[in-house]
Length: 178
Ligand SMILES: CC(C)(COP(=O)(O)OP(=O)(O)OC[C@H]1O[C@@H](n2cnc3c(N)ncnc32)[C@H](O)[C@@H]1OP(=O)(O)O)[C@@H](O)C(=O)NCCC(=O)NCCS
Image 1: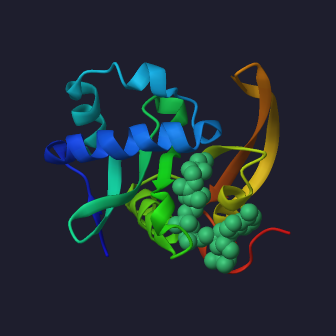
Image 2: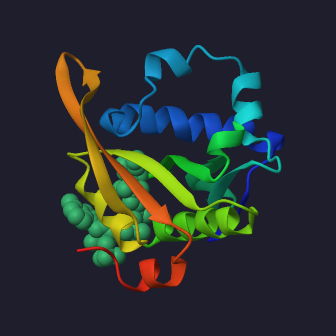
Image 3: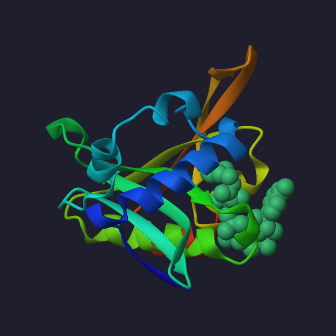
């Protein structure tokens, strides 16, 4: 198993795994399968492209993309001390092996390397217990809950807002909030 930043050349594999994720776990993402399936390849190429402010990590098993997740630094001057994790997904056949922990560690390390980034933010559906578990284990804590953040097939889904402070990264990591 190896993890590395995706590049434009990985766009096709990323699209395939992303579309699978939008179908297997629709409540986990703000985007819908029906929307992304129509997007041109340039959309996925652009998401895969690494810049000084964003990176999409991929986990490969025997050359096949089985897990991924992205981190992006906010652009606006007043928000540049925040970064956001998005699109974390592990293929159903490869869950429970620590793949997401590898993804989160790489995302957090990358945010730490960005001068001036103090917080990593993310949103997670309140019904998504495995995801809440992995983020809490990585040191994130819930600071708020958005009611009815998503509506899927008429059903309201609330979303927890979670944050990791990099100002006290060591104590966050070793002592997850209770
Ligand atoms: C959430 C997800 C990324 C986790 O990936 P993973 O590679 O299986 O995670 P890991 O193997 O690193 O860790 C799984 C952990 O979740 C725990 N877990 C599994 N099912 C759980 C549940 N129902 N409730 C609470 N914890 C659970 C496991 O015990 C394990 O924790 P441990 O290491 O402390 O024992 C994966 O399930 C996934 O892709 N889900 C669909 C997409 C998604 O939800 N993405 C997040 C969007 S915010």
